[in-house]
Image (cartoon, rainbow, N blue to C red; front, side, top):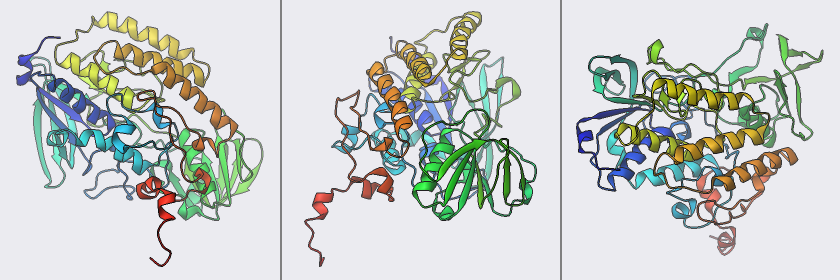
Length: 464
């Protein structure tokens, strides 16, 4: 690489300060630390803090300034995959916590970890909070993007120009809400998983979840854990297929509702107190014109993104984190490092036709994946490809893939106890600690409860 001082005159806009947007900022800071001249970077975040989905809000519907709520996080959410599979290769859990922790931390602990790396930098200086993108246009003559923005706090609309635009707004915030005949007359609660904020309100209730995604699995088990009377999961095509405990079952798709009774394709019917639609999310970019908008369903390799990053007809338009995800934080990093090198003029992309050939190769392989192990191998190879294109610190991807496959088997073996398993870090080699309480018995997801040492508590006199 050669140091590039021409970039100081370039402007880069980033939409979203979640894990992907923060990864992009971090990638530029890593290069600056090596003495490279930096472009001007401006990141726009509609929430009042960074973290994206990990920035929990008790609100549903709309936020303080009337914008649709972005986050779908809820109380009592614990990681549903080993933390060792999402670890930053340049910022380990050991470095952050100073001691081994368990492999399946709750949301507040993972959010603390995300913030730990970025707080060591000056990233906050690049972010304008409470600011949302309203519209984007691109001028073929000037080769610049114009972004129309709203400062929500002072109710001001303005526009700015950028040479590159990074869309890091995520794709798990706009619910896909299906309709079933008669549901408008259902007398109990009907919501989408996006608006689920915790299992407390469903204690003692008979609960119907529609969907067979990770959110259906996790919300169903959480509600069971926190005292729901029963949980029924209704699937469209394929059941989740694990061995459920008594109190949780799977049935084919709902056909219709009559008052509080749901009717299913297998001819059965049952009364319920509440319905939660775990029916996925839409890739939604209302700020982008049709010709620049990524149009895809949730899958491991969206079409029209070269290397899963560059919009093929206009590679200055960059998308991060738009894939279905086994890998998360470290995949966003690998993408951000490659995107950075292109924006810095350090990586030259092949022609549009050559990019099309490369995408078709990945899409064909994606279409032939048969099971979870195949999907893990596919995304592992994808990240290896990205890491070969940049200087992102390498880590043992084969070991991470092995852990993912073990995790898939653990869930099949026992959906209620897989979070009690431990794994070894592929970054530091540290073996995770066992959590002080079995997951099914742990009803407190706070960071303080998670990190406390039981043996220390026992030394405190009872009268204190």
